[in-house]
Amino acid sequence: KTRKKKTAKEENDLLKGWKKIRRKKTPFSNRPIYPTFRTALTFSNVPYVPLIDYNAVSAYYLATSALIGNMAATGSVTGTGGLVFTAGSGINVVTIDQQLLREAWSFTINAPEDAIVLINVLNASVTLDSTTWIYEGGITQESVILNMPNASSLALSSTNKVNILAPLASTAFAQGTVDGLLVVGDLSGGGHVMGGTFNAHAIPDPTTVVLLGLGGVVLLGRRKRLLNRHTA
Image (cartoon, rainbow, N blue to C red; front, top):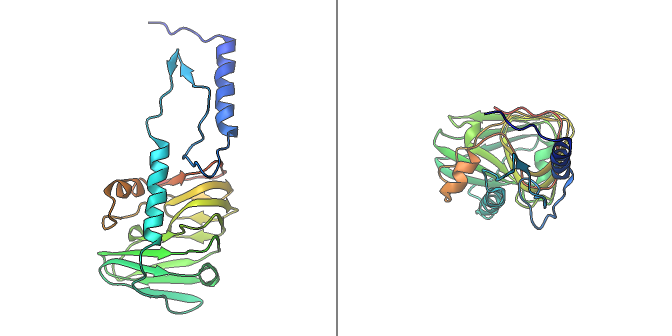
């Protein structure tokens, strides 16, 4: 069957619709992964229906970040420039100030293979420069997450090999690489994201566990301008 060719007006209307999506901004009080738009898109007179409930996915990430952020610390970090956290089997939680983390040239996590390490940074504004993340004792990057439940702004530069969960953060990623999962409110800049997964089998909500395992970049807010993106 021969597909009916779109008229110039139909093609123009479709193009305008996509431009509206790219320009649309939604308030921070209602933060879907992708902006909503009033005019429904159609293709061959069939309305476009998203395959994913973006509002629900956004809610899962927000709830997971808040859940982790409210967990009581089970240990503490030692050192200054070279930070060390020693953990045991199961869930391990540590809270660290963003300035101490920013000034660190390395962060060593020594834990067995069956450990989960949740690192909470509770500041409202967070800046991460280059930190060498070292995983020893059997634990891997997939079992570690850097959680920022209260961060409304996040500045990234250089290289960080760690999963980052900052669902409220307006993120300026000037340069460098995040080698891991990156979940933020919105994202701008020329940095690279390599993608990753988080082995969250010990976190209570199984649906969130699935979402955290999706990998790559997830944007929960209103603006997405990542210039260089790579996903695993």
